[in-house]
Image (cartoon, rainbow, N blue to C red; front, side, top):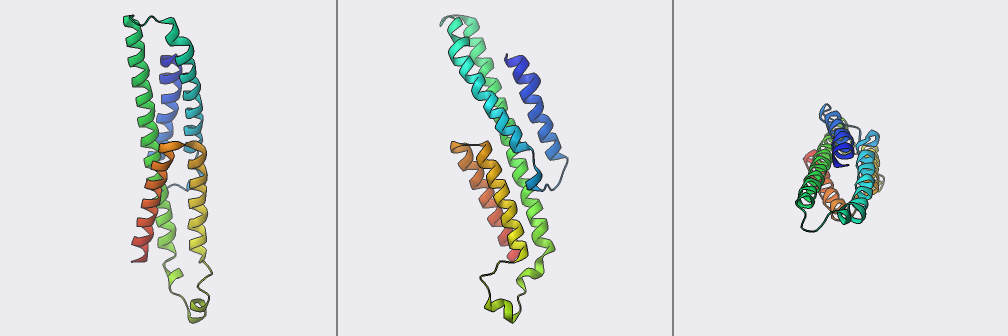
Length: 171
């Protein structure tokens, strides 16, 4: 099951998705399919874990050497899946922030406000609205694909990198 489902399906899809991300320097985050791959992979892993815990391990004796080999293979597979997902998510964040930086760099004049614009500072600029739209799209995809500490970690990294990009842009 690990060999067929894990190595021939899950890891191959994750690797191809990562290769697709690596081939681009900047990615429009609203058009990314990697989040869907992560969400589907997570669902498959949850089902796999349930089957593994309830059915598979019950067939192996507690002193059986094949049990420890199976547990080791299972643990290595899950570790590799987590590494691939982390690699893809960090790459995705990097490419998304580069895309946002590209938008910000094209619109440097948004912050050269006229005297009438200064009076109406509550109105966001077009660039600001574009970045917010993109960021909301990323957050929506991340929250649908991840949960718990994984979600917190990725949102923290994403928030920090966006904050840094905006500060660099404001200089």
